[in-house]
Image 1 (cartoon, rainbow, N blue to C red):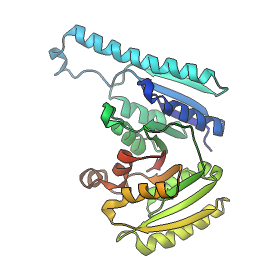
Image 2 (image 1 turned 60 degrees about the horizontal axis):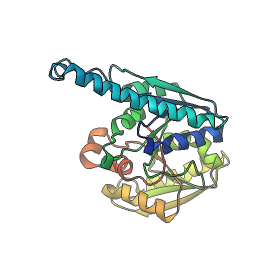
Image 3 (image 1 turned 180 degrees about the vertical axis):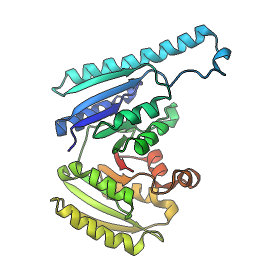
Image 4 (image 1 turned 45 degrees about the horizontal axis):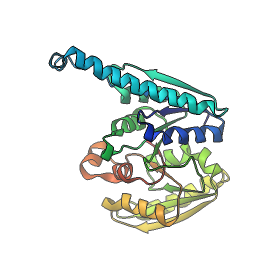
Length: 277
């Protein structure tokens, strides 16, 4: 069950769709929603602080706090329009920065929601997403910055490669899968997956059927280095409104060097992505 959700609030008002998206999920499951806003990352290191005039530091912190409080104010106004159970949390200072603080908070929630980075506008949530995915022990939803609507569960596409992360993601997503109009199990066939993933896909399909979830099985051949593009292409072809996948099937180092499906998806996602590790 999804009864307790934590949301990373965006300080830029143009990205408040993630707040509305999170609220729509909370309403769907009658869940409590906690919106967290961070003023600034951490203390300025001692070796850097002497190079900053005190007035500049004060102005920097004041500007950051104003933006964080603005996100809290907008959250409270939006929540008042509904009967949603919700609370804001303003964090003015963290010793090690928002990624660590947020991921530790997320351990006491059923689900975390964070918006995708937007490199064109200088917004980088990658460290926050990775820390929450790896360190919270909970699933995470990453909302694309192009998102314009609340939650839709017309068709959920689940990526399957037989890995531990894929199993974890699909089972964590059961509350969503039960509410979906259609669920598809999508397998990218290559030298790593091949026959084992297909047989495992049939078995996980039987498992989901016992949860009263009817699954369609689809397979597509593609090279290992082109998995993300293949997934995104199929998302468009089948008009999926949601994607479920395991996060970081490879080691993080290998993903960083070679790219990998997780990094590829986080960079080019077009629909909300439910991830577990």
